[in-house]
Length: 325
Image 1 (spheres, helix red, strand yellow):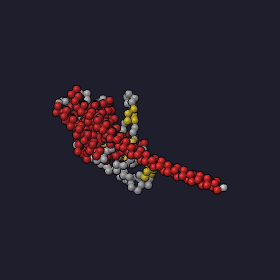
Image 2 (tube, helix red, strand yellow; image 1 turned 135 degrees about the vertical axis):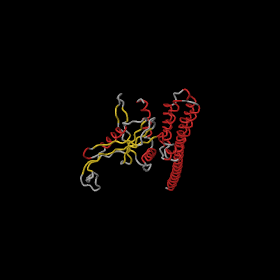
Image 3 (spheres, helix red, strand yellow; image 1 turned 90 degrees about the vertical axis):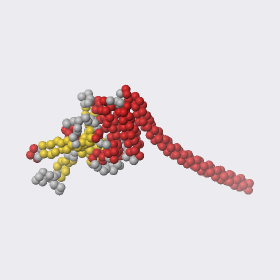
C-alpha cells in the first residue's frame, strides 16, 4: 500500500480522535475496558517526524485521561510484524518525556518492587497500547509479544493486544459505544466491490451506508453517546472515505448521487436545525431586551411627567407668592 493511500486512512483515524471528549472517552472505554466518566479530560500527546519527502507527519497517537492515565492507539491497514517495535519505541519516547523522579522502588530478592520501598530512583510509565487493524487481508494475531532481555536482571515480556475492526459486529461497536470508528465500515465491502460491482453488491453497499453507518450515527446521537457536531463530522469523514474508495468506479454513478444526498444533505439539515435553534434563542433574548427597553422607556416617561407636574406646581406656587407680595 502506497504512503499516500495509507495517509488517507491515518488522517481520518486521527481526525476521529479529535471529536468531542465524550465520544473519545467512549472509544477509550470500549477499547481498553475502562469506565471513565464521559466528562473526563483528554490531553493529546502528538509527536511528529519527517518522511522521505520531508513532510511532517503525526506519528503516534497517545491520549492522557484526567492528566494521569495514558493510552496509545496505532491504526493499521495491513498486518505488520514490525509494528510491535514501533509501538514500543513510541511508548518509550512518551515514558521518557514524562519520566518520574524520586520514586520509591526498592526491590526484593526476586526482583520485584517492594510496596514500602525506601530507596529513591526514576520510573518510566509506559502508556497502555492497542493496535487497531482497520483492514487486513492477512490474519493478524490477537496479541504481539516483544521479549526484553535485561541480561543478569532477567527478561520482561512486553505485550500489545490487537483490535480487529472488520471482525467486530455492528452490534458490538454500538454496545461498546465505539461509534466514532463507524466511517471505516465502508471497508467491509472494499474487496468485494473491487472484484465485482454488480447490482446486488451496489445494493449491499447502499444498505451499509444508510443502515449500518447513518442509522448508527443517528441512534448514538439520540442516546447522547456523541454530540451533534460529532454526528456531522462523522458523516463528513464517511463521505470522504466513500469518495476515496468507491466514487471513481463508473458503475457507482447512481449510488454516488444517493450517497451525496444521504450524507451531505443530512449534514445540512443538522446544521440548519442547529442554526434555527440558535436563531430562536437570539430572537427570544432580543424580545426580552426589547421588553426591558420598553419598560425602561415607560418608566422614564412617567418619571419625566412627574417632574413636569412638579415643575408646574412649583411655578404656580411662585406666581401665587408674587401676587401676594
